[in-house]
Length: 238
Ligand SMILES: C[S@@+](CC[C@H](N)C(=O)[O-])C[C@H]1O[C@@H](n2cnc3c(N)ncnc32)[C@H](O)[C@@H]1O
Image (cartoon, rainbow, N blue to C red; front, side):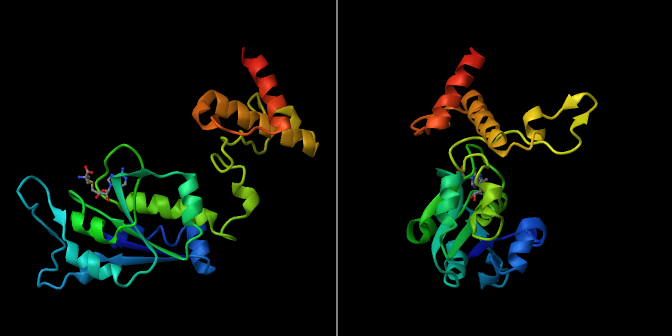
């Protein structure tokens, strides 16, 4: 999959492209992150990518022409990261990971000229109800989340029990040692009994979701085992 990122600040992405799982995915050609400097498409003498708002007022607005020109080099869906978009979640990441190529436009200052949104943007995505200085962190966040969902970037077993993937929060995790300064790992995890361990993990996931995010349980079709475990949990927390 190819992810183009249009930005005025390409250096933001230097370590993003080389570190950890994203770096490995790029090295193994599962992912291509193509950083496009919008300023390269500013053809005036001063390479000016922004200008004052028409009608007056504070701040600067990113000019339309360089963004339109940069977009001509890209294919697939164009996404503008904006606090006014739909709020990003795992479902959107899964859907976008099925695309061959997408382009993320990072705004700055007051944002981009509205005509780009009208003419060239397919989707506006927000990363939450707050305002950041620019779209670079949202673009990284979205690209990172999508990248994990691309086949063979990480093992399916590694993400299928992650929070939100199956509509639940993840269970607690432990590693060695089995006891640290009196803090013990739950006994069942040391039992070697795989079925019991799986059941414990599912129950903990259900319990956490019920206690922390009951909103995401709404409309869930519980399996027979999940129904049994939910009854046990409800009795335990009464
Ligand atoms: C200071 S913000 C502009 C905010 C804009 N004037 C508004 O109030 O909707 C500059 C840029 O940061 C990015 N940005 C800021 N907050 C964001 C959020 N919550 N989600 C996605 N992008 C965001 C957008 O690309 C935006 O164009």
